Each structure stands twice: as structure tokens, then as C-alpha cells.
Length: 385
Image (cartoon, rainbow, N blue to C red; front, side):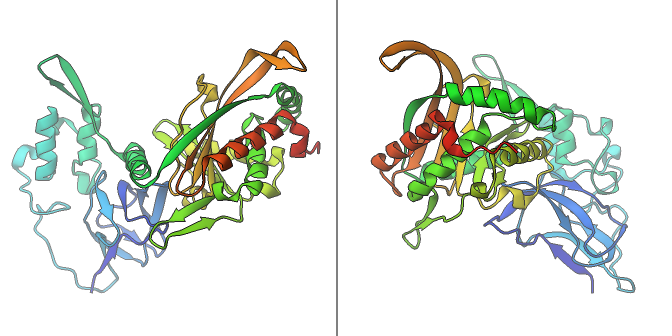
């Protein structure tokens, strides 16, 4: 009998995702392990393969819908299997008279089109058999709904995709953690000079050297001495999970919102290797080509808002990490050095930590240790090869 293909368990506690794209349509013949659709989870866009070969006889979900694990995505019939014939006018979700307005669209889509003032007959459907989806209607309305309230014109923008995921994750952090932020400054003049010299060498190899690899190494060395910041809390079992590995997540700004790729085994990589990996992962994230496994397994996160011009901030922890480290812009300031006031390059630093896992003294000494490494960058064991 025909097989109902449901959204599989994608791991990492993921329970749902937004259907972004169908790669196949009803009537197509597909092979086992062939990619049939793309799902956007709270980690990345995942290509979902078919568990068996056969003919796609029914597609049950539309682009833009939130699909939960276990819900039926499509029905597949293998060669020779009997399939019930459906009325000619059956759409992807039910019976729809084809005469009605001359378009294929569900009642929900029609209601949305009226709400947004979009004429269905002007649209080209991207759904199965050319049906019009919610996403088609939203795109046609430029994803903005203008409404006039008593004070003037307002805009309502759909909270969906990556932005919806970010909103859910931030709420989870605020509801489950007791977080505190500490701040300090570091004199990174010597580090600035080293980076200026090294970046010229790496440019010839196609690698753009930013300050982030140096920040990552300083953080990794400091975490080794402050393990409770490289941890998470299992609230149900009332256990602190101390990570013995150093997998650092880096916050990357993309057109769709913030994503956090994870650089694995930072302690085993040089600054140059980190620079190359940062460049690769950041590009994948911005192009939404990053793989799910490249977003998993983090133990600590670094956010660098300095290149946007900011100084101090209170970064929000990337759940379920116990802490997040943030860096602002580097600016020239008067600084006391050996009893003299001189102009130095100063970096603003912020550390937000979960007070349930550790205390202020641990956080303060951690950030002081990071400053120690940044102010004496030779300690980071930069390799010249």
C-alpha cells in the first residue's frame, strides 16, 4: 500500500521546521535517498531525502507551513501499488472547485489574499500543480501588511523563518536562565600590530584575517582555567554539564538574521586555521548553505558587534550554553601605561553568564584572563608557517 512519508526526527531536540521548498511535485517518480524538500529548522536549512523510491501521489504540506516531526509530508506509491483516484479538482489539501476564480488555492490562502489585498488571478503559483501558496501571497504583498490605526499608518511584517526561530530561542533563554553581564576593556595595541602584519601574508593565500581568530584563541585558553563557563545546565537532572572540548560558536549576521556556526576543536587549531574556517563558515551561513552538523555541538559562543560600530552590550546567551563573550569596536583612547598617559587601541569586552552555573568572581577572573592573553598576544602561540 502507498507509504506516508512523515517529517523524521532531525536530532538536537528539533520538533518542527518551516517548509521552505518542494524539490518534487505530484506525479514525479523519485529514487530512494533523493532530496524531495527543504526544511528550515532552528539550526539551518535541511535537505530532506525520501526513504524509498516510487511515485509522488500526494503532497500534504505547503511551502511556508510549520511542520512538526511525525506529520505526513507526502504519500509515495511504489510501482504496481494501487492508488485511489481522486477527483480532478482535488488540491494538495482537499477538494477545490477549479471554476472558483480560475485558480488553485486553499480557503486559507484565499482568506490571506483578501486580508492582504492581493488578487489571486495575478499570481503564478509555486505549489503542487501550480497551486498558489501562502508564501506566494505574502511575496506579492511584499511581506508587509499596512494598516491605519488611530495614530497613522503601521506595518505588520510576518514573523517567520530564521527570525521566528531567533525569537523563540531568545524567549527560552530569558525564561530559563539567571543571567548577569560583566564588562571590561583591553589594550590591544600590540595585537593590532601583529594582525596588521599577518593579514598581509594571509591575503596572498586568499584568507581574510580579522581579530576574531585571536579572540577565539584567547577565550579558549581562558576557558581551560574556568571550566564552568564552558558548560550547560541540565535542569531536570540538576546537573552541570562541564564540556571537556572547546567548540566555539560564532555569531554571524545574515540577511535573514543571526546564525551561529560552530568551530570544532579550537584548541587543536592555529589562528590561521581558525581564520580560514571562520571565512568558510560565515560565507555558508550568509548564503544559507550551511549544514546542520556545522551548527551543532557548541560549548561557548562569541559575538563580535565591533565591526558595526558598537562598544559595550549585554549579549544574550545562546541556549543552552552557560555563557557568551562579546567584543565591541577597537577605538583609540588615552591610556595610562607605565605612569604615562598615551594613546592606545582599546577593545571593549562583555561577558554574559548564567548565574545558576557559576558566580561573579569566576566571570570576573575569566574576563581578566582573556584580557591578559589579548594584551600579550605572544601567549596565543601564533604560528608563522
